[in-house]
Image (cartoon, rainbow, N blue to C red):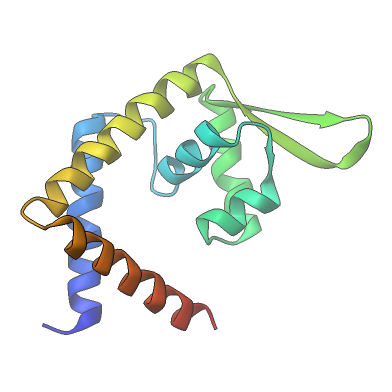
Length: 136
């Protein structure tokens, strides 16, 4: 198999595993990584979310609109800078993000089972290198 086939196959299987364990019809593709980011960066601005998630700002806006309708996030503007919305998890969003982080950890453990610590570090180093190549 080629690199792109392996990456796409692994992505599909990993995502399927996460959504099966999440057992949640409320979240759509793209929203889990936003929840995970906000779990560690509550109050982030949309631009930072887009950069971290590697998705277009317009796509982030659409994802956040749906998340807000589902009661997962709130948007706030602060007096000192009215140009940016800050995104905060609601209690429901925090609960879902906490569950999601655990599921990501479980899925990652399953994916990396049987690999040594050195192999995992090497794999991560190579994937970062590939990501850097693709972003240039």
